Image (cartoon, rainbow, N blue to C red):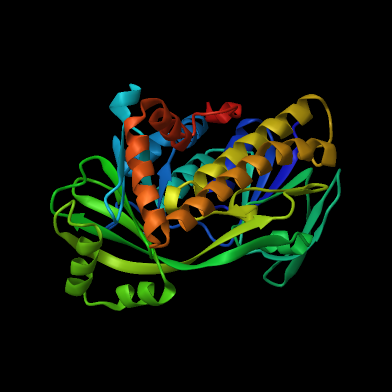
Amino acid sequence: MSGEILIVGGGMVGAAAACALSAEGFQVRLLERQRPDCAWPREGFEIRVSAISRASHNIFEHLGAWPEMVRRRVTPYERMVVWESAGGEIRFDAAELGEPELGHIIENGVIQCALWQVLAQRPEVEVITGAELLSLEPDARRPALRVRKGEQEERLEADLIVAADGARSQLRELAGIETRGWSYDQHALVCTLRAEKGNQATAWQRFMPSGPLALLPLEKEYFSIVWSTSPAEASRLAELAPEAFNEAVTRASEARLGELTLEGERGVFPLRLQHASRYILPGLALVGDAAHVIHPLAGQGVNLGLLDMAELVRVVVEARDRRRPLGHEQTLRKYERARKGENLAMQAAMDGFKRLFSNDITPLRLARNLGLDLADRLGPLKRLLVRNAMGTLGELPPLAR
């Protein structure tokens, strides 16, 4: 008894789910608009990157995708420095934990292509591209998805359907699952920079009243930045002449890395908090951004999605081994219980940090600085914070261990 699973969305989380489920012997159909462009080497860096936690690193190792990521490009970082405009600062160092690194910065395309390379070697996986979703038929035993490809319509059945099609999930909409949330009235400007003083194997983040500036190390002297600020300011920064932009971002970083120089294009993306009212229906499970969207200030978005995936794999393997329907609500509720509370807690924490640091009220600013300096001096608290960021606290699904 293997089981058939239909996954909609072949991004990082969806492709990882296809790798993991096919490795467990499930027959997988993966629907994606088009195959990713995986030509390598590429000129320059991709502007969308992810900070990969130790738990996510473990997942990629188990799936057999990590060596291909390393062959292309991954950047470990050993230290992290977080500071506030008025002077408070906290530093984290992997050496204090006896760890080789705190995490890795990897371009999203590198992650996706490494996973797709694994999929190409799996006869259990059928990839379907260019299919338009028409309707969903939830069912605990044989849910179905009606799609159109060209002039042909087709009804695809499975034992379980997984929505991994992102924050604007069409499958979630077809299921009638509502979302709650709000816009942060912030946009993130992302790009690649060259730093005069090199990357120092360190991730840097400065909190400013308008929003945080994160500098994530890439190879040698390069960084990927995520600069969260007001929509108007993000547009202004994106349109500045390169020399003026270099001056603005160097000033915002307080020149801690010397002069910063733009390399390549700039992109701007709106930021919001979003959470699905439920993660499951009979025969359907939501994972990753289809279920939850978080502020990028701690870089936890894809890590949470990968933990969703790993927990769902654990649940469906257990159901199959006990000869229970994969899409039964009682089965899927185990997944929802395991992940929904964790994701809500992380969303609440990041939302709280964003609101705490995104203002310039003097008493609050003084309290923030005192708090950062105090946390920097309290070894046990620092270790707890960094272990949480590495994804090594709490009960983890087997793939993440």
